[in-house]
Figure 1: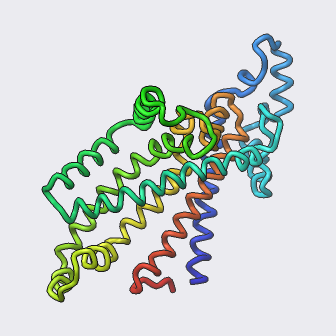
Figure 2: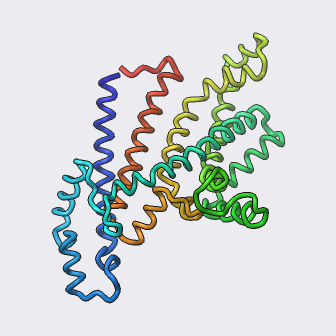
Length: 305
C-alpha cells in the first residue's frame, strides 16, 4: 500500500506540474493584463511602468521560472486587482463552493442512484421511460438554461425560493439542483446500465432461488456488485461539481471559487486564475486517489500491493 501511495503521489505531482504549465501558457497568450488593469486614460509610460513592476516585460521562460519557484513554496503572488494573496482569496471562496457542490452531490447520490436502480428493476415500464427521459434532458440541456428555467418557475412565478445570492438553505435549493442535474442524469444512466448487466448474472438467479426478498436481492447482491463503475463515476462527478460550478455560481451570483475565477478571467488577474485552477486540480487529484482506495473496501478481491 505504501509503495502504491508513493507512486500515486509522484503521478499527482506531475499532473499538477502539467496543469500549472498549461494554465500559465494559456493565460499569457490571451493578452496583456496591463491593458485591462490600468485605467483607460493611462498613458503609455504609465502602462509600461505597471508592466515592468509586475514583471510582464520579462521573457516568458523567466516569468514561468519565477512563478514555479513561488508556487513550490505555496506563494501564488498577489492579486492584481485586490492586492491580496491570490491563494488566500481562493481559499476564502472555497467553503461556499464546497457547500454548493456537496449539496448537489447529495442530490446526485439520493436521486440518481435510486432512480437508476428502479429503472433497471422495472424495464420498459413508465418508471423506466420517465427516468430515461429525465436523463436525456439532463445530459442535453445546457446548465445555464436549466438554471434560468428554474429561476423563472420557482423564484419569479411561484416565489418559493430566492433567485440568487447566499443566505439560508432556501438560497441553496436552485443552484444545487441546477449544478446536480447533469450529474444526476449521468449517474442515473450508468446505474441503470450497471444494474442491467448484473441482474442477468448467475449469482443473482441463485439469490432469487434461495427465496430472498426482491429488495435484498437488488440491493444486497445486485447493487453491491455494480458499485465499482458507479463509485468511479461518483468520484469524478464530485470533482467535477467542485471544479465545474463556474456557470452555476455565475447564474445565481453564488460567491464561490467559480465566480471568482470568472471575474479574474475578465480582469486578467493571472495570480487568482492560477490559484483557482491549481486548487481545484489538487482537489480533483485527491478525490481520484480516495476513489481508488475505496475499491479495496468495496471489492475484497482488489489489493494494492
